[in-house]
Length: 264
Image (cartoon, rainbow, N blue to C red):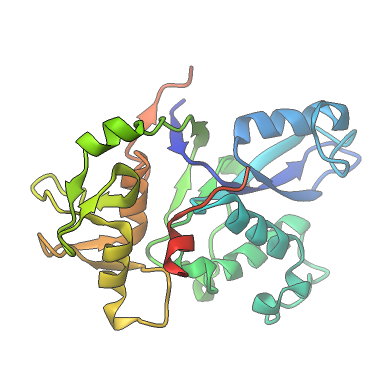
C-alpha cells in the first residue's frame, strides 16, 4: 500500500467507532502524527488516548483534513468542527436531524467549513483514509478548487533541519521582486522546471494579493517570472517538499509560520 509523507504535518481527524456497543460514534481530534495517534486512541487513556475514546474501541481514523500552516490554525479548526453551533462562522449550519447518522452530520459540518473563511483560503487537503466510509460532497457544498480530495494513508515526515547560520549565508538567493537577498527559510520558488523564480515569501504573497488587498492569505496568482498560474498552496507544499500527493513512498509545540508575518 502506498503512503504519502507530509512534512510539517498538522491535521484534524475524524474517528469512527466499530465497537458493537458504541458503533457509529464519532470523535474529532488534532494530531501531528496520525499513525501514532490512532494507536494511542485504541490503546486507551493510560497510553495517551483521549478520555472519550478510552475503553470504547476499536476506533478507525476515517478522514483527516491536513495542510494547516500551524498547530494553532489546526486546533481552531478542530474546535469549530467539534462545536459547530458555538462557532460564529458556522451559525448557518442546522442541527443534526433524526435521519442523520453522526458520521453524516460531521461530514456535513466539515463540508460547510471548507467553504467558509478563513479555512476556504488555506492550502488544505481532505483525505479519506478508509474508502468504505467515503461520502461525496453535496452539490451545494463543493470545496474550493484549490482544496483537493484524496484517498489513502498519510504519514508525518520528519522536518529536515535548516542549515546553520554560516551555511545559510552561502545559499541566499536574490528575490525576483524586491531584489533583496532571501534566506532559505524566507523564500519561495516556482515549481515549474523551466522557471527559476525565487522570491521572499512575503513579497510573493503581497504580489498575489494586489487585487485582494483586504486578505492576508493568497489562493492563487501568476508567477512574476514565467507568468503561469500557480496555486499558493502548491507553492507552500513545494517549499515543504510535499507538493500534493506527487511524493509517495512504500510503507516501511506551537510554531510560527508565514501567515504570522503577513499580519505585521
